[in-house]
Length: 288
Image 1 (cartoon, rainbow, N blue to C red):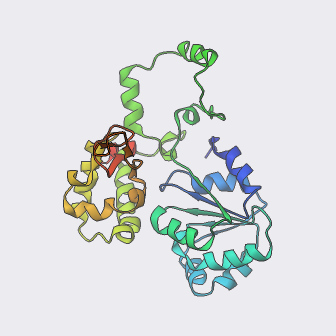
Image 2: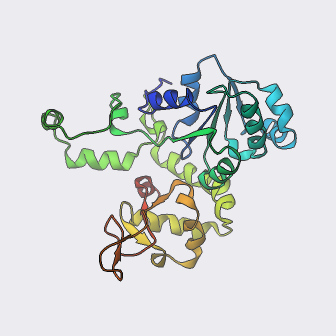
Image 3: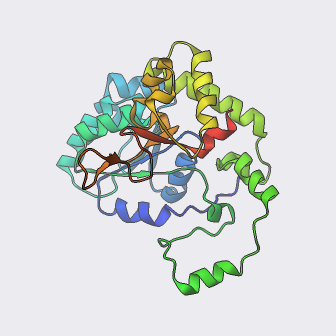
């Protein structure tokens, strides 16, 4: 598999020169492990907590685990063994060398709770999503976009994106597996993704017992992709999922409402009229 260059590379490397611990979060299948293995080369030990034996060792004897995998080290799926975080804290407090630990994690809510409690001030956190349009074209954008006359003129000279191609891009989505030289089967990939997400993340995240109820919730999200919604929009069965931070990357919370000159008038900055509003991820549209 040919590695696709990511825009985040430079920012991650710069942050790793500052923090002793780096945490890369993001949804499943966005290429976190591939990304970090590419940056590490052969200069860093690697351990994945997807391995049942290593996961058991990390949970039952985290000190021995860190003796076995000495720094610099990349530890994959750290959320499966939060017991490691306290020992990582002790290790970096005794030797504050930048870039010693690189961690990945896919369950944002539980993972970030453990990180903020154990590694505050010692960890840099970055989020890796699917491919951007520039990354798909193998032209990662390195600088923040500024609408200068030169850049706008350059964009005007680009060929127009016709509606059928736009729909194809939206339908395909941004997961790396769908943009390889031999891409994964679209329908099989997304159906397997939903099952994995349900079995490995959602039950832990929101204690979901009724799979059919969650799938109905997911389809409801798909119908609202890119739009603002509130708790009242959804049935009570979905509320426990939405109350989690970012719901396992299925949606994001909008900023708190802003108060204007009239104290009785409150409105969120993106035009939603309710206090607690959400914007759903575009990748939900492939689940419906």
